[in-house]
Length: 109
Image (cartoon, rainbow, N blue to C red; front, side, top):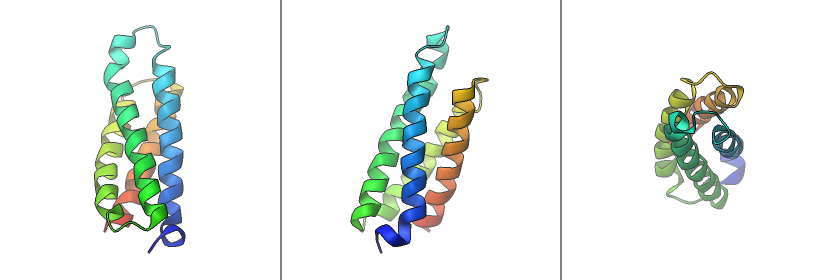
């Protein structure tokens, strides 16, 4: 298994990572940055694990399934946190994270 078989999940992970980076950057520009600290932290964790999962899947790594299970957990946590904030960037991020979590769970099964 590799890139072609896992392309949907790879694409979801890369899209999620990009939106998480955008969300983290946007959160730093909010008035109450302290209130956004947990969101920023999860955005950075989520982007990191999504990039790594996409990379391992692209290489056909036997460890990709395990990492995708972890990625799904982090995406769920990030999506839940972003869903608590009434900003367009957090709403977009929550949607991307929850979609990525679904893709990663399918891949890890």
